[in-house]
Amino acid sequence: MSMARKTDVSQRLFEEASRYIPGGVNSPVRSFRSVGGGPVFADRAEGAYLWDVDGNRYVDFISSWGPMILGHANPEILEAIGMTMGRGTSYGVSTELEIRLAREICEAVPSIEMVRLVSSGTEATMSALRLARGFTGRSKIVKFAGCYHGHSDALLVKAGSGALTLGVPDSPGVTPGTAADTINLPYNDVKSVRDLFAQSGSEIAAVIVEPVAGNMGVVLPEEGFLQCLRDETSKHGALLIFDEVITGFRMSYGGAQEYYGITPDLTCLGKIIGGGLPVGAYGGRRDVMQQVSPSGPVYQAGTLSGNPLAVSAGLAMLRALRRPGVYDELRKKGELLASGLRRVVDELGLPFAVNHIGSVCTLFFTSERVRDFDTAVKSNTKLFSRFFTGMLDEGFLLPPSQFETWFVSLAHKQEDIEAAVQATKRVLQRLN
Ligand SMILES: *Cc1c(COP(=O)(O)O)cnc(C)c1O
Image 1 (cartoon, rainbow, N blue to C red):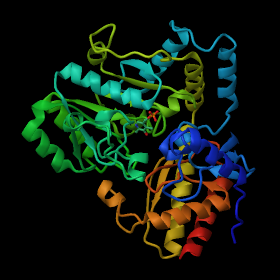
Image 2 (cartoon, rainbow, N blue to C red):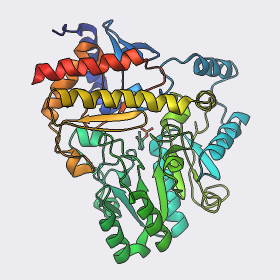
Image 3 (tube, rainbow, N blue to C red):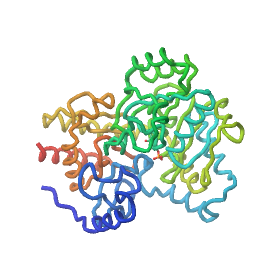
Image 4 (cartoon, rainbow, N blue to C red):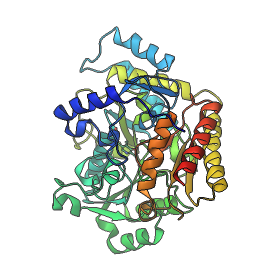
């Protein structure tokens, strides 16, 4: 039997939060609206564990939605932040730290010759699109249903993540004019890409894609999909933008582009490169990046861009990820989780799909193979909600949505992962 968790303090904070903050949360993905119940309020976190304000301890698979790939409160990152903090927290003039992070990113990511630091993934994708339009002189962009690229207007069309979870993939407030320049295609559908380019290739500024989709749950690119995007954009003079805000420094040190051997024109980064502080980045071909202000005419700026604390955290993060064996260890831990989940659903005779690669994984409550938005949304989200709550009571914090990714970090121990698999079995048995 699962013990009912204490939630008194979280409940009280949520009521208070709801008076001052829309929905009581500063990002919709933190809301438990789709799974029921009030959200968890964190007190502290360390390694693979998060404690809430009611004193419950969870093995955490949200991992701050990706950045915490070393686990929480990593001593090297805390030390780097502390050292920098003593010298001030923001200057509004340049620092040497920014060069070091920029150089590290350029050396790590195959497509990136120059990079601009910003403060979030949203800023990175929004700026990359503006740049692609400025560079090509074209208006239209292509995205894929269920991919999420942050919350800028042009990209909030059939968007994944919280927008999908809460049923608002096309947000009110995005003007028809803006939406009209965004073309949505099904993920993994090579034919629709070829047809579109054959018909209107000369109007397309850029194709933006999550090279492994993580915001409708984990969906892998099928053989030939990314290559097709590379071929069609090259042939028609459009830019290919990889949104590697999740996959960057996670799939491998050089991201998904290194993993799959496909080189985009521009790449967007975020999450991991800030080590848990707000950072994003966009970079790519030198001739394209040189169009960015002040070397070129495409304007983009930020008061806190390249913030010294955030950059220090990012540098410490990348230093840790350069150690030999890190990506093997992440892969093994991800594999342990995914194979465990597959074994459990097999044993219980449940037909559910487990999508997985490297250190990311989603258990979909559907019997169909999940390869795009349409197959992902066939999942039984009611059943997922009950599963989610059951796991929470067992002490495992999963993303509160069927359409999100479970993130495994280096801090997850084998026992943590095996315990999560066992808990999954118990909870699914109870639901059955
Ligand atoms: C999280 C995410 C973003 C947005 O990043 P923010 O820092 O939340 O603005 C963009 N693209 C992808 C693929 C993401 O997962």
